[in-house]
Amino acid sequence: MAAAPRFALRTVVLDCPDAHVLADFYGRLLGWPVTESEPGWVLMRCPDGGTGLSFQSEAAYVPPVWPEQPGAQQKMLHLDIRVDDLDAAVAHAVAVGARPAAFQPQEDVRVLFDPAGHPFCLFEDGSSTSG
Image 1 (cartoon, rainbow, N blue to C red):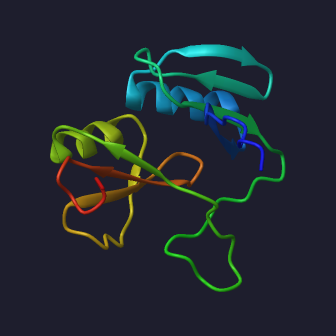
Image 2: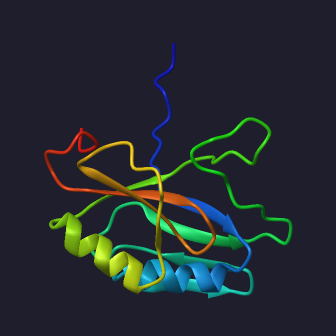
């Protein structure tokens, strides 16, 4: 059997109603610069390298419902973001436009929604999500 080809995950793409609005939110949240931009699409990367985030405008975008409910738009993924101070990170996220979820299933993780309705989690090293 031939050796498997090498794969490298470079970017996670989030669909949304307006790529530039969502990129602005994540840029302020993470402190990442936009590295490429065109109408309807934006790419940003951590200055230290690693996997980037892209945002793609979709006219028919429907925000996911979380927690999931039968018959409702399901989330396709969520982002787990490690922080050094959970309370300060939540306050910062809210200040730049995130909305805390009403349901918080773990004591050491905070679930929030970005402006397009995607859920994302904030956690510190050592939490149940840091695995």
